[in-house]
Image 1 (tube, rainbow, N blue to C red):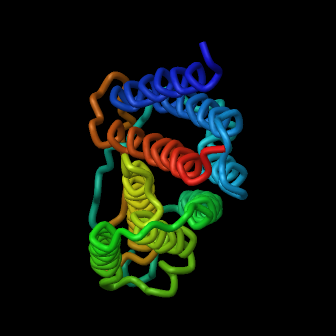
Image 2 (cartoon, helix red, strand yellow):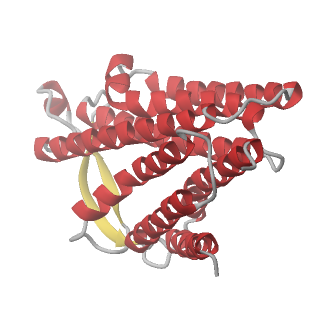
Image 3 (cartoon, rainbow, N blue to C red):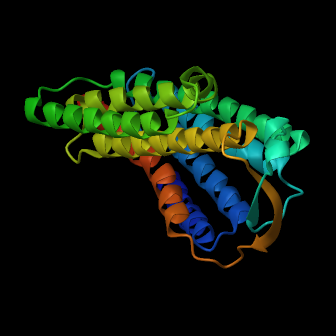
Length: 293
């Protein structure tokens, strides 16, 4: 069997295991299988047929950067439980004296740990941004084709995605400082903007099967979800750091989510893996069609 088929088969098998693990909330196994799938995809890109200059290294680097946050999180969280655990909180109102003294909603060490987690998410957003920029270099290196209808459609979808992302972010700014949110979420925001730009340009550089724009759409969706999650976590941190309604977290019960079906997590895992894969395969096919030799 040819190496490219072996690597694609390995990618499909590992990707399927990652999605199934995410479906039953086994996060560590999902991350491990996702990294194996990304490594197989990088191997496929490196050993596949001829490609235009800059396409192959840009694709391989972009896929590696997109998988880097998962690798770092898996390394840092090796001592954590393999299954997800949630804290079911018990909210208790502050009395007037506590509210007047300006007591924080959560103990300061917890808020500091939460802030450190947000800083780690911001670094992951930087890797996401660099990965999307590498994929943009690969797409821009493909030969352009005259496809006005497909280009207009891709542009409309990209603009619609940005409008939805902007409306969601604006809804979280209500009562929260905009500069504070952007100070944390700017890498994910720029990654979303760059992915939307790649989507808008991908239709004019697509091969016959249109895998490049489909992959670019999935990459844009995954970056938009990353930006949404980061703004949501920052908004929650700001709410607990600056209580204005006299509410604080007093107690909670840790609940294990082993074998709990999580369809959104499985869909996100599938989109995160399928986007770069479709874009990479489509870019190599488009490059090969432009230069049959």
